[in-house]
Every structure is written in structure tokens, then in C-alpha cells.
Image (cartoon, rainbow, N blue to C red; front, side):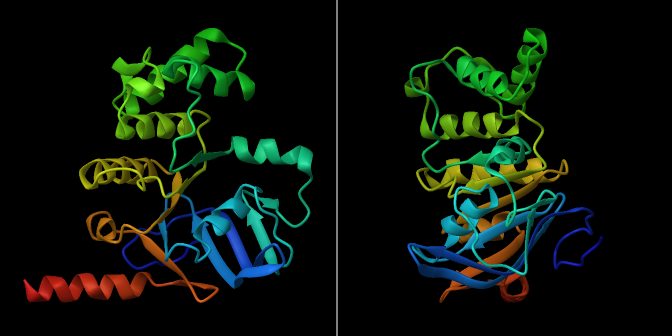
Length: 248
């Protein structure tokens, strides 16, 4: 399947497909009539004010929050309306999840944090685990931090490790919930640049953010959560960029 999105190359393989999805929390409708799609290799922003539903939306993709009503809700070929609890770990294994607060295990080194994930997801061969850890640490430029404890790292370094962790199992899509929320602007730009590079390898990235200037630096598909609905506003942002270029 191909779709034409402003500012993107045509991609294949729809990874997330929501049609008329309703999201509730404590019997309150957070977002309604959601139509949201992500294809292989796409770089997707979800923007909106605090409390607009960005995190709730992302939590549904990895079954942290249930979808109670939808015409269609599929992630990586799984029907979220009928998925069994026992099948959720396999879904999450095909995804990478990055949080604002890093969520590293603080009682062990970077190496042991990454080993823990690989062992938990079925990597039995020690040499293969070591090789994969070296690959992802090299990818995020953190090879020399392998034996450091999380508290010995800066916020940006911890987030790079979190990205490496998310990439361990060759995910088809990375879900990043405000990954730059606790970082200074320069570090935030470096993190988003790294995620953008990852998307260019074929892994889709879906990232919530309130850091709108970053959208100019690293363009992507943009959805906005507002007034209990989510809309594709990519074209609006492209027009703004063109107007700014004309003014220059």
C-alpha cells in the first residue's frame, strides 16, 4: 500500500491503522473519531497541549491503555480490539518504546540494562547479545559509556541509552512519548536528529512533543490533538515553512 504525504517519500507497509477509534480514560472520552495511520519509515509527530490526549493515544498502540470502540485498530498486523493479554509481549517486542523519564534500571550499568532486555525477550546466545549491544551503542554514539551507571550520565546520554534499548530488537516502529521533555534545546535537537536518522533506516518513529521549533528542523508528518480530536495538520506546517522561506 502506498500513500502520498506532503514532504515524505512514498512508503509501503502500514504499521498502525486506526479508523474511527475512541479513547476513554475513567469513562471520559479523551479522543474521538481518530483516523491515524503510520507507514514503514515514516517520521510522525503528535503535538498538542498538556492533557490533549497525546500520551493516551500512544499508550493505546502498545496496549497500556485499552481501546473500547473502533471501526479498526491495528498495530503491526494485530487487532487491538481482540488481542489477548498473552499476545501483548510479542507485540511490544516488535516495537521500541521511549519515555520522557528514560526509565533505566538505576541499580545496574548500561551494559546490564541492555542485557536485561535481551534476556527478557529471548536472546539466549551470549555472543549475539554482546554483538547486538555493541551495535546499538555504536549507533547512538555511546560505546564508551557501556560500564557506566545511569546516575553517571547526563540526561541526554540517558536518553541515548533509552533509544539504544528501544532499538535492540530491530523494531518496526518506535513510540517516543515526549522524549525531549527533560532536555535542553541543543540536546533535544540531537535526540530528535538521531530518531530521524533511525526512521530513514525503515523503522517508523511516532513521537509526541510540545517542542514545536523542532518540527522546522526535522520535518515530518504532523498530527495535532485538540478539542478531543486528532487531525493530520502536515499541510498546514508545510505552508508555514514555505511562507517563512518566501519572507527570507
